[in-house]
Image 1 (spheres, rainbow, N blue to C red):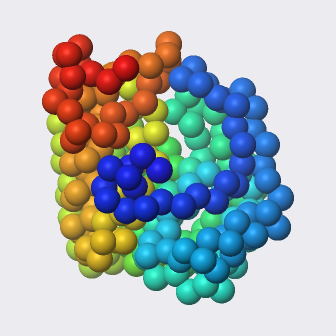
Image 2: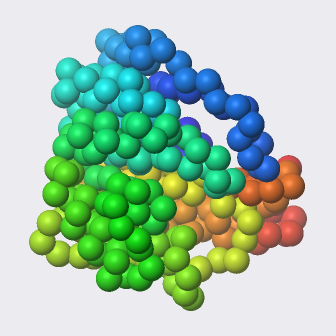
Image 3: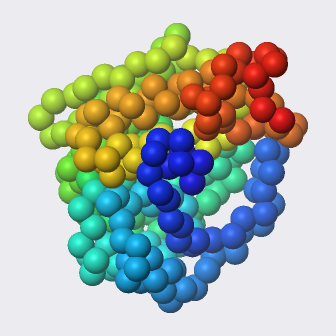
Length: 251
């Protein structure tokens, strides 16, 4: 929601699961009933509407199927599927049995899917250690039906973080200098949300990804520590001059 606000779109939310978590980890997860998830979507669409949709933590196969059914029913056009499986702390946010539902139900509906390396390894059934592996995984996932696949490289090593966007014909590289920090809680969700904001503004997928990459990089670069574990990003970095430790840091 902070990302949407920072990038000039009005965000509405559909809660799929409640988590008890802090910067150190997730201690408990409780998924909502699929009927409640559907009711939230219908409530939004009967009044406010949506120019773009981003999915995040869906918890289980029943919720995946419920969300996919509502995407088809309401005819959403710009759909960002972030296949959230693990928290930054390593906690599992999607039951294993739901992986096939993701691939079968949601991927064919997606404008773009945004897996990181661990997620892409599970979804593509392969190990990813290099850019060539990222490309192969993207090819595998593209065959599942999304218009675009971007395999993010933040979990790999090297001076730069390389994300590879694939449209079925060509790859486009998005690079940023890797930042040594523990304040990376929510990078994947933020990235997917920033892409959705770009699509809501009517931008192309490529332009939306470019903007999202820059936005997340700056949000990491200017992040300030909260808690004792993986701290959050600075989603409103554009609103202050915030070198870490400067007087511009928010409190």
